[in-house]
Image (cartoon, rainbow over all chains, first blue to last red; front, top):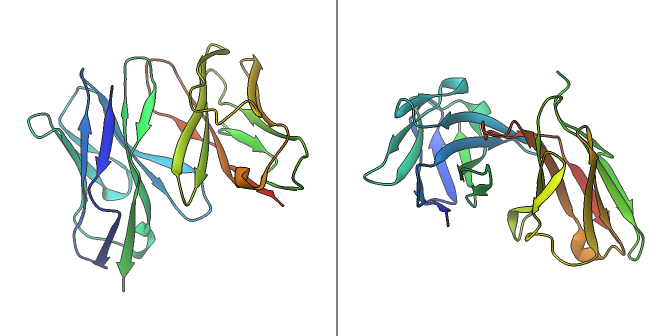
Length: 112
Length: 113
């Protein structure tokens, strides 16, 4: 069985300050991990993925995430938030069969 | 590539009517997923297919819901009869088996009155 916990349902930052969205996972094997972003009234878009290569993964729009097996975490970060980053973010774990488990989502608000 | 295509984008129907949602996955992808998203329950996996075969339908709410994938380029999700609690945004996603990242369509917003 696998599971994902996004530790914050809402995160609010000021424009230009760092972003940290936290994700812990549980898996009985080496998982594949993903972050997706969903802007209002849009579908989900892949931000980045980890599939057992480098533990620090770089994605689109300046986001990156670090896979920490010892902490079972896959936190998403960005050095400087932009207004356009305001959206909902989903952490996802996939098993060997490709079945994905989504976290409950974190809503990111960016204040001017 | 056009990405995952869903139709219709919006559907408003009355309780008791049949609703059919359609999805065209990305060409070459061999896994297809149907999700439902609501404020109350978030994003839920309803069913997924590998090579047109349903693998896991444990997320399908009840017998009123059915999904088919007659070929690699087309899938439907049918609700019969529809109920107001089925109101949600329904997403279709596809992926290449073994690669795992999913590509989502724009969704169908269903309103059942």
